[in-house]
Length: 304
Image 1 (cartoon, rainbow, N blue to C red):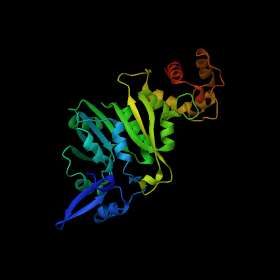
Image 2 (cartoon, rainbow, N blue to C red):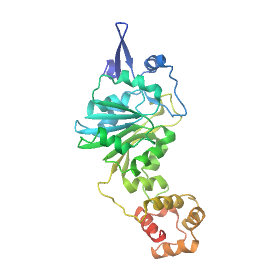
Image 3 (cartoon, helix red, strand yellow):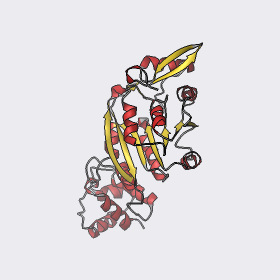
Image 4 (tube, rainbow, N blue to C red):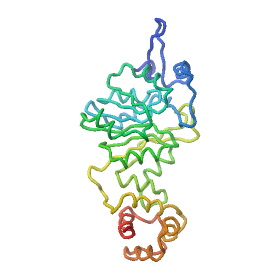
């Protein structure tokens, strides 16, 4: 619910008195979390949103309605979750930190369209979770405020699992956002940029300053969206080998593609040069010069 000044609040009854928790206020959060002996975990990369404008904006730009199911990764204390519940048909949130389970029961207890799944999103069968809990919805989307240390693994897990989802909207470190959304064929692009492009189209929606979190991280963040292709945009002979090759292409960015690939994946320079020649590319070409189409074509020539 919304309390004074438009801030996100949660009301609880303790000893017959109403306790007002503003989930975007440091003192209120401490008051809410202290009974559970909660301390922010650096190992879990916990930085909770305390700017009341961020989550409503994320949900608005995600574009959900009552026919939309949402899979949320890492609800924290439920600030983003509450906004998702208001706008969506159902929200299923996966949380690893056991200390937050009773907190979420408090902050989200009034929402009958919320369900908590306890566990690690990297180990759980997300496809089965979606089948069991969100299969009745027209559209399923993913939304998350991801810890910085696990951004790429979580996003790649979501993409590689080929889940029945249409979009992924996540808040990540600004530098990571720029890599994830980089145009292929530019200096900003890397292996993860190619991986994202393989599955969908990505864009940076808006930036979020470090002061919008508690504890405040050392860097700013960005919210990005990945719109997944309805049908595969690119076809390769072997996806697993393709992504291994892509990692090799970008492994030594300052070197020529020939040297980088020969050093990282063990291919002969003659083999790589021959493939580049067939594509009409110079042997001095670097990873940052290749388009997505050229990377796919090169993989078809090199992978047997």
